[in-house]
Image (cartoon, rainbow over all chains, first blue to last red; front, top):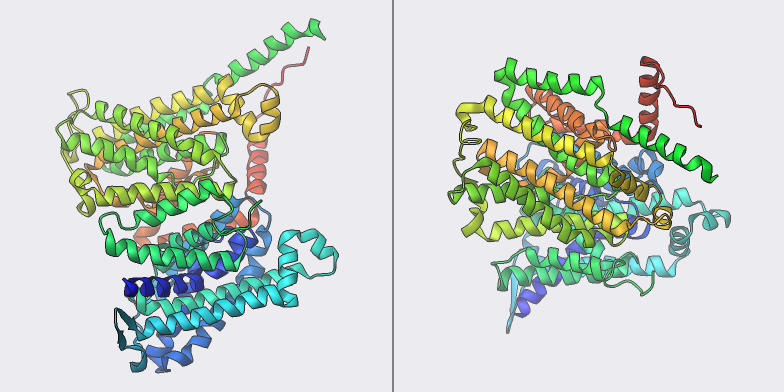
Length: 286
Length: 338
């Protein structure tokens, strides 16, 4: 029971890391970014390739899993996404589906469609036995790392000047620009951080989901969208609780009522959207 | 002012009636498609596929192009139609026409039931709700394998159309002809509906909902009806797909299907009914051509096309095409206002 709860929390933390970038672009900036998973996959591949081909240890690859997708994120944002802020959601959907359709065959072509495995170092493999609770070392690692990142991100968004500017720009772009905030640069940085965190999430998730393969962006797209839908359009804290709720529900649902499986989380998503279109954890009011 | 009214009404009525007439180009296009099926039976399978995807995209066009309702889960209705037709055939009700009608009704009903969910909220909510509904249906089909065959899929034998024409693997041309007749009939119906006063009012709602409401158009009811019709069309496409391939599997509810049909419609252009069919011909034709050269990777080019399309701007391309079309044919005669 406690073990399931803990696994659910660990999975939820991972989902948060993967989806928090989307919580900023989709949740805050209202940009329908269906290509978010591509950045997560990119991070997973960076770690897998550095480990398997260059022999770099797991922990040392993680910074690269952040930096590479973040840099790619800046380029893509400046080249493509920037043109479509404020465009209709349909156009944004089309652009980002187009990117996904391009990314999948491209990764497939260069890196084959075989899943790239990530071999965890020995100290992350074991498990601790406590009375009534079994804790996998890697799960514990995930909870600690993701929890730290979530806390940092929240402090960053709420407590720093950058965070205040970002929130201002999201609330009213024109007024923020009028106050001398460089909104374009701000969005690009936010987008890069979101992409980088997704990449880091992809690298950390690779072991849990059995390796990264080119179909990663489609497989996890729905989970990301659910996190943001449940977490609401009020940013990172909402996404955090949304992801935790979803992680626990998903793990517990698959364990206790395997006969309905993933149906639970889809139902949660649709119901949430209908009852509270702004998300379960949003501040009330629109 | 009031003296002009009968003349004005007559002018509007004449205009609407003229739009309803079939243009020569349309007649040529449909005849040519029919001729292709009859003359090149070896391509009948491909044409059949184009017709079915075209019908599916036409269904999305009704929802998106006419009523302005975006969807990322249109495969829900395709899947419902396909499974309805498939389950009926596997339980001994093998008559294709009956299966087609029931499948359309079931999907249409599902459209009417889910329409209130879709009408709530913004485009963003709509995208996610439609996606969620299709995923839920897919998961239901997955878990109720006693009915749907689960992950193994459902295969069955289908009866003859009207008790006469076999549409199984022996009769690929007959299958394409069957699809052609159904698609043409449904297209003609959609053409009639969209050019009726009902169809005009639905477009008015899309363009300016507040103003349409002020003119006395019951916006919600019209949108629900249109969404239901679109769902029934998707159900018919699903039934055709199931009956002519004689297999239904879970991938019919996939996100991929909903995305593909959206791309098909966008490639062809929404809002004038032919977009779906033209898009389907381009989409499947391109896949067929590219898959021969680089199998597995053909989607890359579709993706590139989409990115280019959106980056250049869909409206800009549309106006450029319209300008081109205007230059190619003499300007339509305008009736002088009284």
